Length: 153
Image (cartoon, rainbow, N blue to C red; front, top):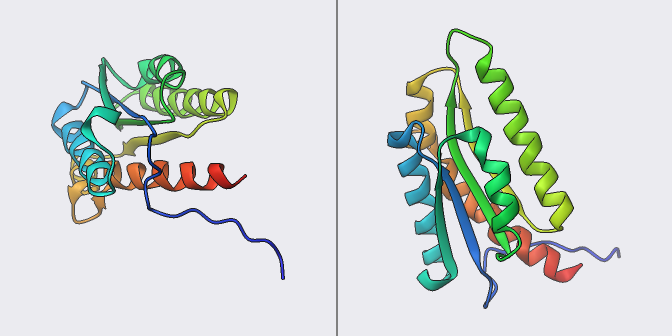
């Protein structure tokens, strides 16, 4: 039988989490932050082990996450990028995602991409606590699970 390593949703003790959240589209993003905080606390992470940092928008998230990952065990980035009439959406969404991936790989720690990329405001609302769930909450679950996987490797 192979050796199988799998994560769990039991938050490891003594770990520090950061949530980097954009102020742009704040009505949506605040719901993502609330979802992430709720999951972390419900899974046993004490308030003192959670830091929330506000940034202007998605473009700024990778740099702030790079700083945060130096002092935290997992970083969750949340933002809402909603398609407009110009190609700005494509550049911001793509480069932010690439930047977050690079930060996580360089640090060897979970940097979770909780950036919503939607075509409409209604889609963003649905994914921030509406009928499609809360992607901020899901991102926090991923952070916990990734920490438990990495502890086993």
